[in-house]
Image (tube, rainbow, N blue to C red; front, side, top):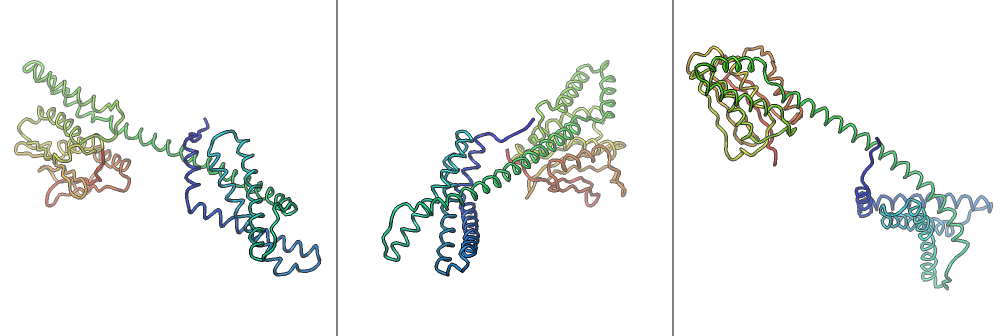
Length: 364
């Protein structure tokens, strides 16, 4: 389906061009240069027809004549665009376009003769028919060529913008699809372990099994993302992280101490959905899985010049040749999609084992 700009947008764009001084200056200079070229051509043609040079005074007058007509015609056309500004039929605009073109030529001729009459102390007579008819023919030819050229240019430019908009929409759809895929994944091993833990609790602690089932349901409901949000508040992300940790506590018991340290002043700021949970899951799965006691996992979110998100633990250090699994890969993918080239992700063992993400704060 062909897409076009709303009529109101076209009107705004037309008026923006009209009131833009640089744009006005550009078309004025262009019109004067065209007038100068036409004047030179006319001087040569008249000289050829007469068989002799028309003289410097006549040549200067002809060049000035052509430049002034070019100036007035271009500004008259410019004014016709402002007057029309997308209102009425296209036929009305064409009529207005040629009417203002001829009016500009007429005003230029009479103003020139009036000025020269004042300068040389001669009598001014109104309406110079022969000059106006000659100027009208030249004006109609130049105006028509100009109209065709700029109409084609505008049409071509519009098509390019439509293609660019289509490409942008496709890119946005692709990004949304990729983000939706990343956000909807929950590690099947986590699901398997959680269901096993629930099954083991059903007979001797039904209340705890029920609580864990509700928390697992909440986690999955969050992962579905019915609202299609890519960014959520830090507080919301922390709430769902806490839900995830409550489930994992059933498995790990008192072996691991979970610490969440959030700067409350930025709890309303936006971060990508499910940015932290996969990294915390990685820390439990790889770094702390064999911890018997005194394990510690800490999530810290602080505001510096940017937003610092740090996930640290005291488990096994990262291997020298780190394999990028789902958790890290999904983090890289989300950051690249939402902050292309404008984020930092550091993985270190010294002085602390941690993953540190730095991103720009998002306004609400």
